[in-house]
Picture 1: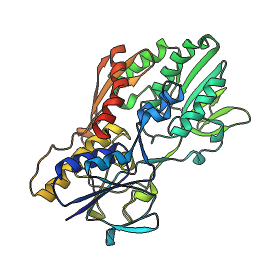
Picture 2 (picture 1 turned 60 degrees about the horizontal axis):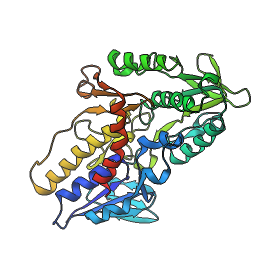
Picture 3 (picture 1 turned 90 degrees about the horizontal axis):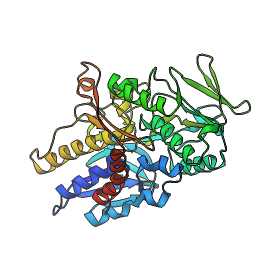
Picture 4 (picture 1 turned 180 degrees about the vertical axis):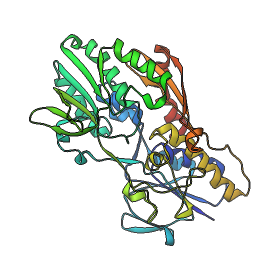
Length: 383
């Protein structure tokens, strides 16, 4: 009998747990999922919570629901991974494993940016509720949406927030009294995804009257003067500042001794096995930036499918699943409009060039699909 330990109950960990539960049903193998929260949160809906379209209880489900599928769930804090001993310290107890998937994601670190206490963000459920209160108090002025650095969950999110704020302010009849500025390190909106996607997003922002301030690398916030400060000396005044907080890979999930200079665990990009131990896999936001993949739930999802297939093949003696699909797609919601971009990252992983990206569609109907997807996700993985 093997014990497969999954650290993290986010998108990646949840998909791994479900696929292993199906593939190992009727066997004596144990699947153990560890997470510090009792809930799985559907993070794409956090901006909707911030804008009052959703409540926190609508965007979460108990991880204990996995136990109906044969997955043991342990709520606890991962304190240490001791790879040579194949042990993980959780809640003061040492737990052993035979195979492990580390999917602890990225942690937001607002304290890493000076003056961040003057900003709001929806990258956590607590942050989304605090941002909601700030928006409810807002009666007009300049809203600035800024980015603390290149590494953060869901690269399109700042653009979506700009569009959703425009939509919400129009509904409150405050748009004529308001200005929206999006300050981003990209030279053009989503320029890393190529001209097709960038062109569509540029058009949408312009139609909504959102001013884009490109090549803006934020270094600090001045709360007293209410300024967002750039590394190049630019200063952007604000009445309400929504800021992507600094992100860092989860410290608890590191493959000891084998890290990139930026602190990401070193993995084989073809298998996602940690170079420190091939019995340990690492997926999702805590590794993707190191291999030039975006920190996005859909990427973690495909990685999880692929890693689960490798584990099933190892335990059952035959390859029974798909190969890794280096594709990302997400529905970008702009309030009264939506876009479905897609990128193929094969050339990124092969070190042969940039990703191949395009727009699959743009319509209000696509927004309805995003609204339905949350329910489909919960029904599929946590029913």
